[in-house]
Image 1: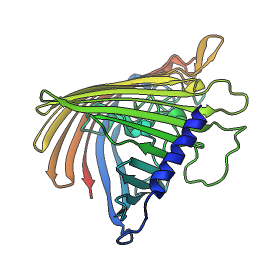
Image 2 (image 1 turned 60 degrees about the vertical axis):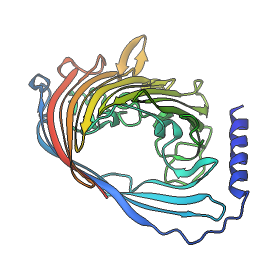
Image 3 (image 1 turned 135 degrees about the vertical axis):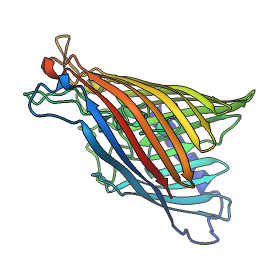
Image 4 (image 1 turned 180 degrees about the vertical axis):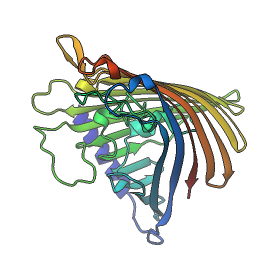
Length: 378
């Protein structure tokens, strides 16, 4: 049924694209944009966790993130718009090119083809957060769990695109894998999105061995936005799965996400939730809740993130990768000018674990941090 649905969607999309002449007034011309963030912070760790070896991750640190975006769009004579987006990593990162994709949009909605997040991810709503990005795995940049004598540590991995550290999720954390996505026009506040990814690869044109890898990822996102009695309301839901799993794998990994955000007179509040099931040791859930207020160039937010990762089980006992995280951030921002924002976060987070492979000296890692930085968009 899933393959029939995907095939039908592809045929309809192709028909809409080819239904009219595709003459363009002029070729696409690229513009340059992007962002840069530079953060400086001080971390104070719990000294009771320094019982194994020489491990002190406290003190001052610098963290940066930057991308350069090349974008272009043209409008065809049939009324459709066609665009391109290539995002170059400009900071310390193993991936040279982040997203790279094409867009085709018109009265029928929008189609995205290439390495880009799925509809499940892009349509998700979460609380406003004006600081270092609690709901994106950034907590791990300022609280690094310690390692015991055997090399085991509280698992702070799987924080990005996975529920242990973010409610913006996709099954197996497929992230920017090559995919095709379709988004309907928004009707009476409702919009629906559907994504299909043949496999989990990014920046790779080779064929995938379906006997050894999960394939045929299907991801669905939906949201509703409306203004009611002066209140702005946003509600989202998402679901994703790998419909064809590797040989010897019985369960199809599933990811779900939900979010709600309310706003009125500068105040906003929101809650978001995500879950991984049938992901083996990566099974996890996370919740993000927060409130915020913004007026003119200034804003302040208070947010909480709680995540729990199941890990592997042996004879009913958690023994590898089990972990929990609790984090709370008080953040503020001030827009100094167009594209220039000063921001800061006072945060506290704690990682705990009942992993039997970790000795008692590192079964908890706690840190308090004060971080300030400049966020530039261009």
